[in-house]
Image (cartoon, rainbow over all chains, first blue to last red; front, side, top):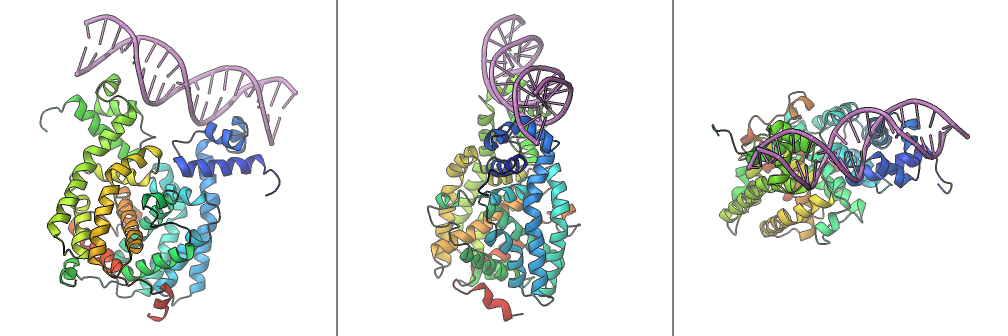
Length: 212
Length: 212
DNA sequence: GTCTATAGGTTGATAGAC
DNA sequence: GTCTATCAACCTATAGAC
């Protein structure tokens, strides 16, 4: 950390930062090498192509996050509550992600449907989603699987949005919301989504019309 | 509709389709003119620049959606329930959006934080968000405003994700989820988020640990 | 491993004929 | 309003010296 990092690492770090800030297509290899203060050709030496670099940048951050999620899910055991499951899913990104630039990057991956990112998604996220869907079905035996998967889709969307707009959130909300206390944010999200997940299926939304 | 639309309209239609499918940066003006079967120079004649075209494409779809949201919110009245408010927010996109290509486009706008789109966001979404935040605060008097805005952030994220991945959702979920019945999807989303919004604040998420 | 130089293609934008 | 032709800038990727 105190020493100047190697060329390969510096390329990954700069690419991570710029991909997260501007998106993949809007970031050129020249932007990256300028930021990393390395030669342009070094990118094609260490990585073969821009796509390979993108994949390396993404997997470097997503793999440990998803490994950790599975680890926490396993720790929660067979009888995990909805809260336990949601915490296992959210803690690695909301609480444990140390580098500020990583959040927007992961958000981009989930927010940019393209042929390339779909491939990444399938290999990195699909198995994870299945594991969590199973756990949620066990914790909520009254809920049909499609309902669980829909609600999981809502959860992933909210988490993605959270990550994507993290740098802009404070000014967007006039200072009302920010990421300064991650533990509170985690509790807030877990509480909100656990309540939603526990909503009994079948009740028409209009049913609440006369409740308040 | 039966007649061949004007050049300007065809450019807007094609740009809308391609921007939604591939994103803004990944779509070139040449892609658009090829799809629209018009000359490249026509873009710079009818619109001044690519950015102006983007703005025109976005505003053409978002303005009526947001106008309709306000209209439905006003119709719901002063004593609107959470469900009423959520329906006013979601109906114009989930139920009333007729063109298939519009959904991914709107998703992109909310999923691509950039200086340019932030400007669009501020002008198109910020006033709307404030109106809905006020309505939600009125419907949920026990909830502090920051909590309402956080939960609104979750809602917008889920809706964005819904729109973005609409074309891929069915295969992503192994056929479990799709947009074929929009009314059911609307009810599902309204019910889920209304339940979440009604969650009493202050309860620690861990409190649910022993509930099931 | 790192550099210079450059190939080969694409981009957004425009000038000027019709 | 619509076209052809073209510009200058940018891109990714690579060849080859050191």
